[in-house]
Image (cartoon, rainbow, N blue to C red; front, side, top):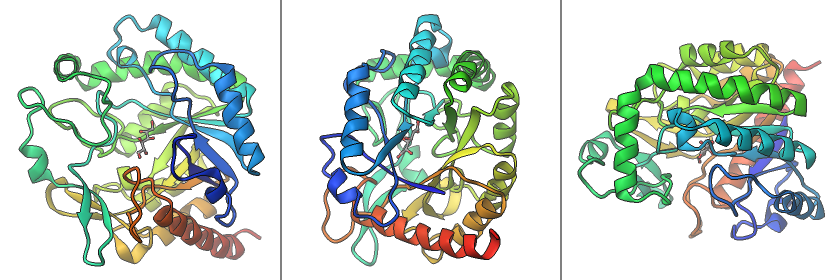
Length: 348
Ligand code: DNO
């Protein structure tokens, strides 16, 4: 297992000085944020991230994400944008990146209805309550939810939503297929594993299709291009917020197939009707059995990247929702403990 931590670059209040002090920290997960989605990343921006990480004894070898432009997902004049995407993969490889995370979620990336739900112990975390989602109609209301790309105006968001509603799930699959058939061979040649992030949450919202939601979808995705570079980012908190996704089973199956390039470890409490709360990483804090999930990875032979995913805000920390230092560092330490114990037990 290669322990990693997400870093949002120089503006991130969680600095590399701090990240390097977390025990067993190895890799930095980052991206180029100085150009618009769809454009080519400059080599100097990539090299700067690499050098800064190296100065702190860390390796920049995971990218999260090279975002996929909406026109690629919509199959609308996508050719040149896919060319740029391939070029970005080649450039990432030049600075030593080994794994690139991406998602194929229409319009909205991860979606929560509240960012600061106060728990009994005074910590706050991100939650999605279905009753709050049901009160929102993005076609009528002016809404902004956390995780959404703020570069779109409300009118642009409405137009996009209508296009996706028309496209439907099968149309989206078709465009994913076009994308993968172009991108995966380039990644394979560049020595990069492409790790698709599941939809978060893994069900359709506002009548827009979401397709990377369960085991069937993951099987279908992997069958589109047979390549060691066509891989998964197993995000336990995304897939795991619906009880029908058995995370330990999925971890074992895809680890054995060598298809898990990256793991986001996070615990959630599954509530009624699709609602869920993000919780501390420990098994007893949420619905997921983190021990069983890590055991499945270890026994399945997983040797990719792991990062503690979203943390709560604790000890008065203020920062980017889900991406403070303290709770993610506690998560990393817990995850280190699980891996150490399980590797000693099962890897002889
Ligand atoms: C949320 C993240 C996602 C993820 C993208 C990958 O915190 O896990 O935003 O980075 O979906 O493309």
